[in-house]
Each structure stands twice: as C-alpha cells, then as structure tokens.
Image 1 (cartoon, rainbow, N blue to C red):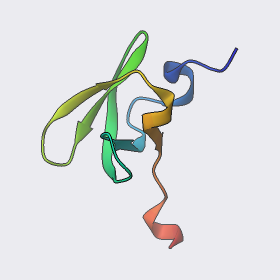
Image 2: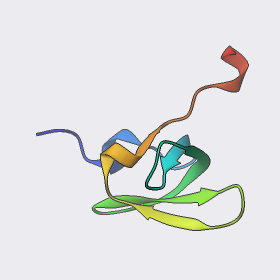
Image 3: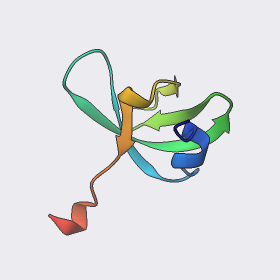
Image 4: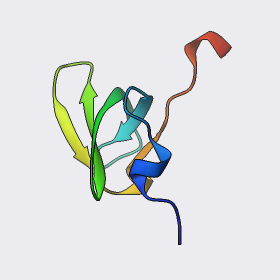
Length: 64
C-alpha cells in the first residue's frame, strides 16, 4: 500500500499542486486532514488535496 499523503507531506513543506492540466502551482502544506492535506497557494486560496497524482514536493529554488 502506498504511503498516505499525510505521511509524505509535512505541515510547512513547500509543494506544487496541479489543477487539471500540466501546469503546477506552488503552495505550502498548512494542515493534515485525513485522507488529504490542505495547501495554501501564493494567491491566498486554500485547496484540499486528496489525489497523490496532483501534488508533489516543490523543487528547492536554491538548487537551481
């Protein structure tokens, strides 16, 4: 069984979320709420993400 989102993404972690396309938008995990995580986007919107295919760890901008 794959790990649950709350096991993969820590509160405070920078992530990217995909909204029905190929574009990824940056945000930060603000809370765990089984079965998913709450993500606050830069524009102030909060999204509840439950699908592992639509969230990933953000690249570290200092590595680029």
